[in-house]
Amino acid sequence: ESYDMGGHDTYMHKEIHEQVEAVDRVLRGRIDDRFSTVHLGGLNLGPREARQIRRVKILGCGTSYHAGLIGAQMIEELARIPADAEPASEFRYRNPVVDPDTLYVAVSQSGETYDVLAAVQELKRKGARVLGVVNVVGSAIAREADGGIYVHAGPEVCVVSTKCFTNTTVAFALLALHLGRTRDLSVRDGKRIIEGLRKLPEQITEILRQEEEIKKLAESYADARSMLFIGRVRGYPVAREASLKLKEVSYIHAEAYPASELKHGPLALIEPALPTVAIVPDDDLLEKNRAALEEIKARAGQILAVAHQHQEKADQTVLVPKNEDELDPILMGIPLQLLAYHTAKALGRDIDKPRNLAKSVTVE
Ligand code: AGP
Image (cartoon, rainbow, N blue to C red; front, side, top):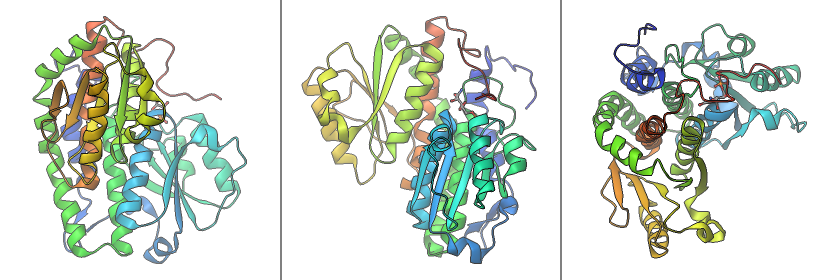
């Protein structure tokens, strides 16, 4: 992409709309139909080494950490390797036990975030193998890592990350598929995931077509003082990222909570003035998620659902096209990027440069 605004009023808007081509780019040349897997040339990890990994630990900050939470679930599901994500900024200060059989993955759009770089350097010093999932080619983290995946989102100018988040989740799907097919994921499941990946650009186009309706919703929520975002398992990192997006760009307070934890405290907050955004994928947890919506409705809470089918208990539902269960989180956050953008616009915020924030935090 050029830096030309192409008719968009902000980089955030432009970058949200660039996601169709960006996702196409992260997939390009990587799918291997013959073996129902993907080629990740820069990984620098042979099949024997891939089979020896006993854990995957993903490190990143902010939005990249959230993409890592989604990636960890994909790796557990598709490769059946225990995986988790942690903010790099926390990891580096707790004298972590570095395990030689763990694959460490550092995630960063800029490749320059100091907390991530410092975590990578500490890991390398202790002999760990570290991969980078990075957007900016040749950046410090990309250079420091033993190998990795470029997410090819193109330049992201808005301080608030959108297209890079989406591309990073796709890059994690590729990594999970690659590790899975090197280990025990069947050819059939490999094909299923590849078909799902191929559908993504068209499905993103479908989501972006709903912008006018999402804009109206955003305008109706713009006077909220606070919003709650909930999701369960695959939906929870989506809720976290959507909540971060809203607060960064609109300055509305937002909190993300696992839907399963509502009854352990946050239900006390529910009242008409606190809208809830619920991530409700059509997966094996659908009924559980519906029960959470009922709990909120019973307390007169307003609900906006992001779902694959209309949700009766919700006041409004934004429909997202269904993909494979494992890939659903890639798409479910996209309408909420638009929600954050239009809320901020309704409030007259400085969308590309929110107060107090920098695009990359290169100091401690
Ligand atoms: C994203 O919207 C944020 N501005 C922020 O959380 C960002 O993701 C974080 O600072 C990490 O940046 P990086 O991906 O360049 O490492």
